[in-house]
Amino acid sequence: MAEQFSMLRSELTELLLVAVGAVPGALLRWQLAHHLGDQNLLVNVLGAALLGLLAGRPVAPRRQLLVGIGFCGSLTTFSSWMLAAMKHVSAGDWPAALGLIGLTLGLGLGAAALGFSLGRRLRPPEQPRSEP
Image (cartoon, rainbow, N blue to C red):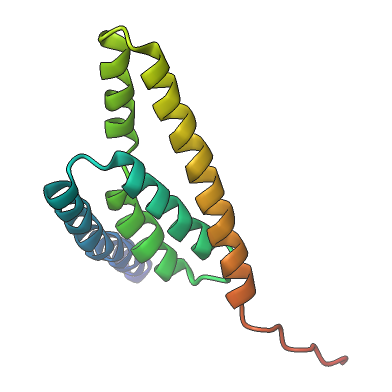
């Protein structure tokens, strides 16, 4: 019984971390859309850069849940990106659809790589291991 309670407590803690991270990510996305219009490209590239930064550093699992899954997951939007591309396709504007897909992929990969590189540079130096 104690083991089940411990597992439940751990899962609820993880759920709470994701939820707490998701709220500011969703609010930032909403504010960007409110002030700048539909900015799928901006939020996806920004989220890719932040996830790259996290991936380039040693990040505690709880921080990954809070920032990676919670914040970045609610900030970025795959479904809205695909819907925007589909609207171009439906209008017969294949060049715009392919351009949007290519631009988002190219900038997103570049932002993730840049974030990863920055994360590696910001990584604390490894402590020398003493020989036993």
